[in-house]
Image (tube, rainbow, N blue to C red):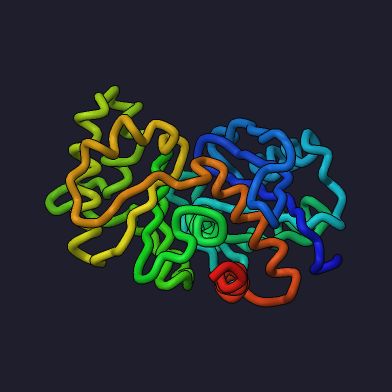
Length: 272
């Protein structure tokens, strides 16, 4: 594969949907329509693999000469998924990168979904050139987080799993967008939960910028003005496409042979 390519495929696996597209990595934009299929019930590895294969077939990008990045909602270390908050427990300790490579018959590059969304926003979006700590939160089935300090990715932060005092459920079970839908909360009632969550993050980390991604970010005007924070909070520039774009960008960067964190930093360094 050539490292001078300017396009790659990104696939973003989520708890409810699997999305993919061909990405222009110079502009940070989708070159194709976004293809989306439902995440299979139970989200077992074989079923998720079949769904990813369906996305690639629909896109017509099964050619191994085009780099492929896959984002996944779990802690990812050395290609292994080490958690399973919104997928089957089978993924815990699973050699996922090798599994997808064998199943797709091609090399892939595999990373945490919120981390790759952070990479996309650092290179092409709201975190570009931000000094200090930028904290991306993805509000969807769960709450994913990506920490970027002066553009350096700190991987696998998993701050959606902060515990609530005297409660059995964690932050994402109570404050994710899925909780709003499940409990049929108004924007105002849901914003009160988000207020607690972002207050907690402010107290713990003193960030310089919050960036809100995930599917609900397209409705940012409905809930961000309801929050009162010391830290500026803005919607992700690439909204729910950030995971696709970041996965594709990371795939191309890793063609150089660097690890995920090093590749992410190389991407950011090219724009600062």
